Length: 102
Image (cartoon, rainbow, N blue to C red; front, side, top):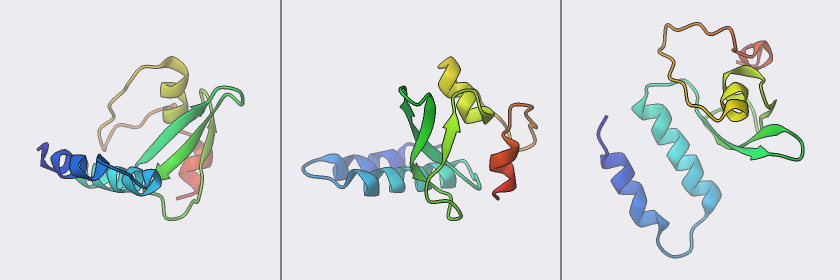
């Protein structure tokens, strides 16, 4: 993967920015770079113990909330560890609720 897409994003970060627009562009570009059908940028809501989508490459959902530990992303949020799944890697942590929303 080249770093050119990230280099194109950096100038947009100087001065006043529309954070939602920048995060949306970032998520869309990450999805393109990884040839992914979806990508989401989450923030952790510690009080609610949830992940809340801040930007997503998910046209079918406006906002996505996952309990910490729910699904692959919830597992990552809970454990604070990264994981990498390939396109053919089934994962038992996948959330049925999220998969059904596709």
